[in-house]
Length: 78
Image (cartoon, rainbow, N blue to C red; front, side, top):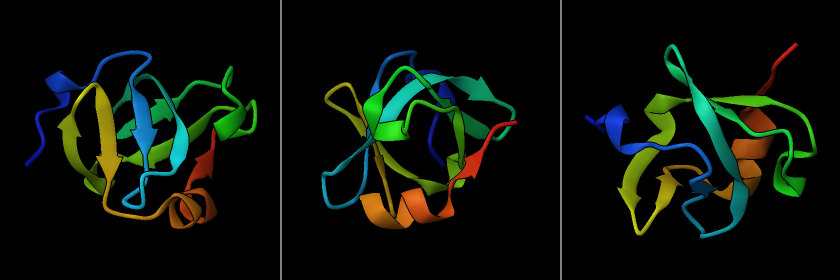
């Protein structure tokens, strides 16, 4: 289980392929809210489940999904 305390604001979120998914805005319940001020997240807030996090290392949050798979499955915050 990943310790969410290791996830900090502005950390880069990358897919399992190393592709840029976005930057952490903050933890919102069981999700990571991505910053909307990032071109990788389409300049909108998106939510990704903490269950996708595979590793936290080198100031990056690495997901178990590829960049494209994560972007296809993330939820837009309304």
